[in-house]
Length: 152
Image 1 (cartoon, rainbow, N blue to C red):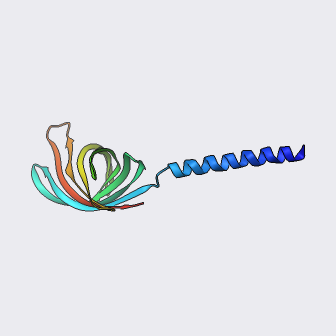
Image 2 (cartoon, rainbow, N blue to C red):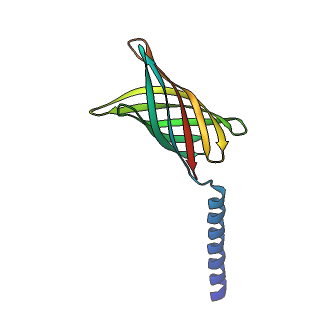
Image 3 (tube, rainbow, N blue to C red):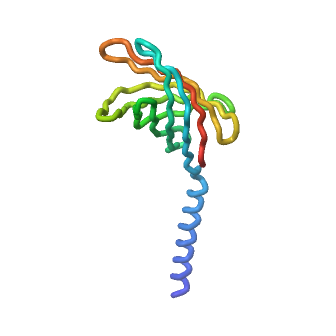
């Protein structure tokens, strides 16, 4: 009787262990991206920009991150959804809704559309635009390109 109880406990423990291992093997490792690049911001005049940033892929198709642009402008909660186009080429559609500059933070959603192409296994290039419409009319258009390195 005692051996039957130990056997059932052992079987339950082995089943839980195997189930946990199967789930761990099924999950992809988190991928972290860091990027650097630049672009041209159009709003009444043109300004060259430099940007650095990064993000984490929460799921295989959803990245959350931030970016720092020249002048101390920090874009927070950048989210991008990834739609594969071709082998090694993706379309990223997203937004950066919250911005912070020294002494000031504000909500000014910037919609973003980028094409991302893999050049080597861990390196990609992204080209696209970010745009914001202002309530008073007009807006910002930011053409940008950046190199993206991925850590698995």
